[in-house]
Structure formats: structure tokens, C-alpha cells
Amino acid sequence: NAGVTQTPKFQVLKTGQSMTLQCAQDMNHNSMYWYRQDPGMGLRLIYYSASEGTTDKGEVPNGYNVSRLNKREFSLRLESAAPSQTSVYFCASSLWASGYNEQFFGPGTRLTVL
Amino acid sequence: EDKVVQSPLSLVVHEGDTVTLNCSYEVTNFRSLLWYKQEKKAPTFLFMLTSSGIEKKSGRLSSILDKKELFSILNITATQTGDSAVYLCAVASSSGTYKYIFGTGTRLKVLA
Image 1 (cartoon, rainbow over the protein chains, first blue to last red):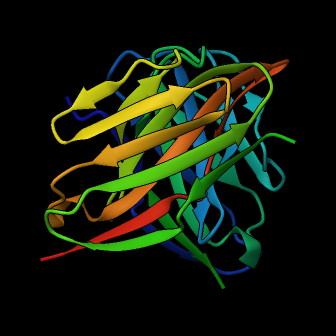
Image 2: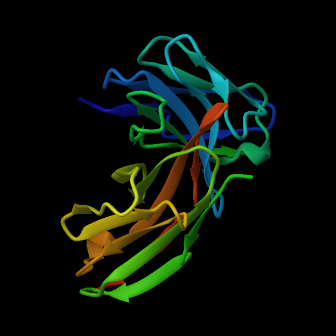
């Protein structure tokens, strides 16, 4: 039981390049989330998927797109990376997006955009 | 605007001390308050609180919620160096759109 896994662990991009961050969970959770964490800012929700087949914007969605590929996998895409997207990205999952279930986090991806 | 404020921002104590971390919130349609511990990597879940006045306890850690005064505290007794981490507070709300709002965290350092 691996929990929530993310790839890659580290990535350096040049401004304007694109990339996809991958996330998978093996806990049979229905809801999945993408957060970014910046110094002094806490965790901020980018997008979430309350259940397979649905996605919704969070607090800071601009510059990102997501795909809920199936129940296990939820990817985050940066179409044209900008230095402001330098951050640590965490994927998380929970049984439901009800507010009554704890979230389980992946190990994070440290992204640097030059 | 929904917000979660944690205090203090950072704290340095010696092993054996007791610490109290604070989390206050202003959110619409409160559902739950959660505490996480974050060491070098992913946050790990500690407690979820939904009802006022009921203490949740796990070993040396305990937490309680006051829904009237809109705050929660996390207590750690007999601190150990392994307690050094950032402690995050998050509030789940559901007001049209679902969301978790995180505070910026309290960085705790426990000296041997």
C-alpha cells in the first residue's frame, strides 16, 4: 500500500516550457487535490476532483490544468511555465470531499522555473 | 474572506517542555478543523475536530476546538526532538464550492 505517489520529485523548467505532474493513489479514495506550498503562504488549493469525472477550480487555478484520468490518477499540467510557478506541489486524496475526511498527502514535487 | 491564522509563527523550546499552538479561523459553513504535522516532506494527519469541547488525544498530543470563539489549540507535552516540525491547521468549509483553508503553520524546534 503506497498511499499517494507523485512524479517527478524534482523538476527544473525554463520559462515557457510545459510539463505534467503525475499523482496516483491506491486507497480507493474518491476525491483528489492539487496544492502548492510557498514560503509564508501555507498550502493553497489549485484544483480538486471531488469524484471521478469531475474537476473544479480551487483558490489559485490560473496557469494550470488538470485531468482526472481515472479513479486512481489525477494529473496537473503547466502549459507555459512562469517563474511565479516555482513552488512545491503536493497531491492529496480523501475518501470524499465532504470536509469530514482527512486528506492524505503525497511526498511533493519541487519545481523551479528559471 | 475566509482565513485561518496560526500563532506563534515559530517557537523554540527544550526537551520536556509543554507547548500550546493556536489556530483561529473565520470561515463560512464550517465543517471541520484538522491538524497536520509537516517535517521535511508531506503533511501527515494528526487530528480532525468537528465538535466543541471534545478533546482528541494521541499520546503526548491533544487538541480541542471551541466553535463559539472560533479557535483550536494543539498541546504537546513532554516535547522531544522528534516533535520538531511545522504544524499546520486547516479548516474545511462548504459554501457553494468545497474548500480546505490552511494556515501558514507554526514552526516548532525542540532542542535537546
